Image (cartoon, rainbow, N blue to C red; front, side, top):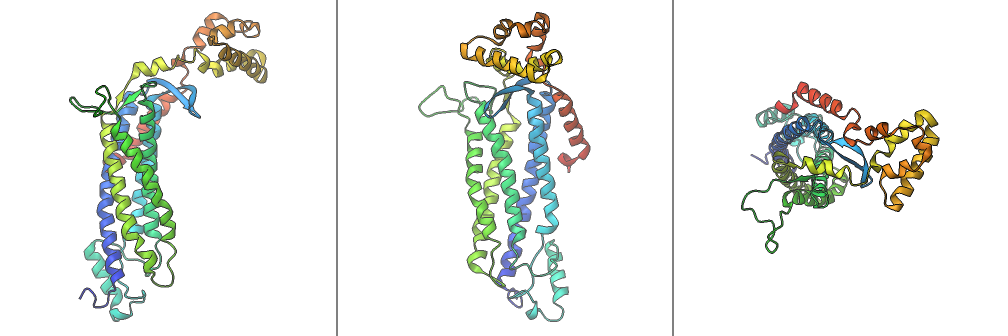
Length: 355
């Protein structure tokens, strides 16, 4: 009776949707767990100053809570996307060989409705055997989530470098980091998450090929889904599991974050001095003066204070007391803490972490 009317693709497509529905619940659960970890980090490190970096180099001060709040909002959007896709994705197929329901009698619509109701699936508007946008959309969404988590994993990996040492993943007592180097505490979990995320990316190009069905069914295209959809779900589940461990026990090296803010010898605050000087000398002139002091100071290996103090065009307008205040990096984080507060409040008000 399985094939008394329905065709093989009805069975396979509906079965795959049921599998994706089960995987989907796991993804929602794990993203909420990650969200709660990021919410906690954002609240705890609302005021923790650290270096903000652009184009790989030190730029201006931020707070670590500001960084994690950005990660949190990105995950929130992915959670919203997952919820929005549900009515489009979770539909079944009971339409017969070419989608006309010719083999299902004059009660075909009632049969489809009753079968899909028993399976807990929605009823499509029309046959979707040659229309694979549902699976392609979900695969792209998996790719987006993987991209975000891979980005976070890679950033933690970079910030764990000994030369930076601002973050580290959990490392248990007795855990072995290297089989030959006893001192190593390798960031193996985030490394794995970044690796799997990079590998998953290769599947994204196949998703567009899945759309290229010929006529009413195309096995050469259709069967690619049998590999790619389970594989992408498994890979995302690995990344989610890795990141739950890392973000749930992330070590934040607050003192090292503060230390790293001084390694440029004050040049990270050049923008702040420029704006203070622009009130007296004009913005463009101030930029030229501070630029010259910054470039010559870095080339000669002196501190920013030394470079400024030898330029009368700056010292004539900014006192030593003002300069000392301007060069405190912890007081130049803008309204980063207030932005964190807003994200935390919006997250709690939305309730998505407790759905």
